[in-house]
Image (cartoon, rainbow over all chains, first blue to last red; front, side, top):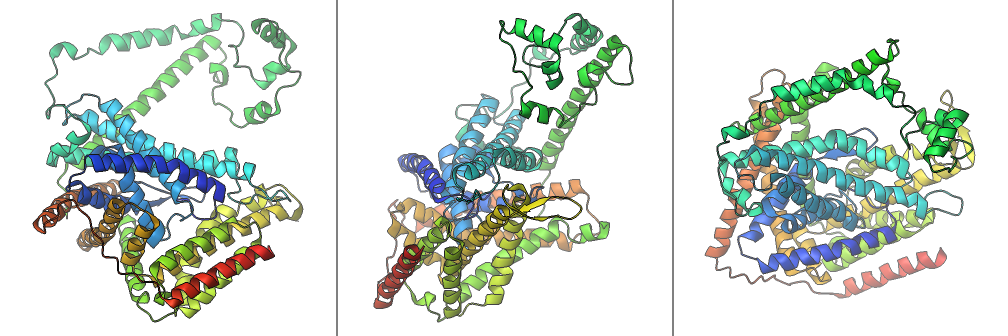
Length: 363
Length: 275
């Protein structure tokens, strides 16, 4: 995600610098206001830690590399303003001494990772952890999600910066002057890798380190959780939920799912390219749209993208099943099963993260 | 295939990366002490000059001008007694691989005048695509060459100190210098931790064991960082730190610094005038 020199135009770099300066200014002012000598070495050392975390590089498809930045854990340990300074300093050392990330793109890199990343990570962490006790497992989940969302927001910003280049800056012969890929390529190229891999690396690191701190030095978590208790209160018996009625309701809803067949026509706005060609359905669309007729031909973009992915069970009717009622029921069973499977997988992963982090570190 | 993967697993790769980065720092420290041309200049001139050259290489729309800046940097590399082989290995090859991988698809995805059809795949290579890819590569190589020139010819502490003259707040310069100082301690510590685990490793490690190792290494590093920050704070207090930060400003402008500023301005002005 470190944008090298030459990928962004000088005007984009200037805009990104201009965007970053007010945040840096506020961060320094806030730091000066609460400055105690203890904070200076802490920011410096955590900045160095962020550098080391960024060294755990993982190759990603699409020619880029994925790595954690440490924005999740730094936002938890330092708060958003000191965290954005610490990550900016780590990025400055990378750009100046190791040539990782461009000098002209320093503003953009800081805006994406240090500023947006820290603010998003802190916001998500505070939102999810709310008033949970310092020892609560909810804080681990909150830190993991904060890291995951923050790194993805950073990647999204970077993809936008890449994607606008060919639109805004091109030679007289039409060739792009800087990053050559438009938004429809740059966004998926950046996001697929970060949503699927780099985000998980960031989440695992943030979650693990918060779990470790809960065991070793819980007071450090108080900086971003003022006024909460250290220990988890015992859960009152009344709050323990009996899940059996919920399972029964879910089963009943699945059995009743073929009722959906009673509704005629397509949902408004969910028309396919074929629907827009069918005169009968076009009439229905016109009536449903307050007598506004749809375009003569389906939009080319819609037609092109509609063939991009073919669902294995189109219209909730597996091809091997002839009865639509049975098809609906099977689709409901399959869909619910996939969701439950994903949820169990997520719980299992979370349990693994916690169990790994709670083990005694080896040196 | 399996053996190859296990030989170059996460642990070995990370140790190799850490060794490379420590080696890079040592090389930079050594070469900045050489009696070359650029080494003799004031760090402020070097930081400013590097920035001006990078901006010139990146902002121009003419490929030849980027090439001219690259050649000018090459001349400075030679006059600074830096190894071109080292440059090739550390900078040019890395940028060629990374940017090349990103720029390559642009050759066929950029619309324009078709000059070649890729056999079997029937992809059209356009003139505009080739120019775009080459321009991106040239800019990235030139900028990386200049950055490396600055790093290899200037003591890192001097680079940080010179930033003070560009109106960077004193607080930031202090934290930056402290980070740079303790970064190498952390890197060395990480390498020692991984070396210690690697020397006790018997057989293959599963993915979950590797994950467990990274989590525990990072936990230890975080603990040590926080512990160290407390130690540094106590050391600062014991030396009478009262919150006032002072830097030793011992840079002085000499005739050769003025001369190099004039040459740099002339070169850049000439390039822009011709373009």
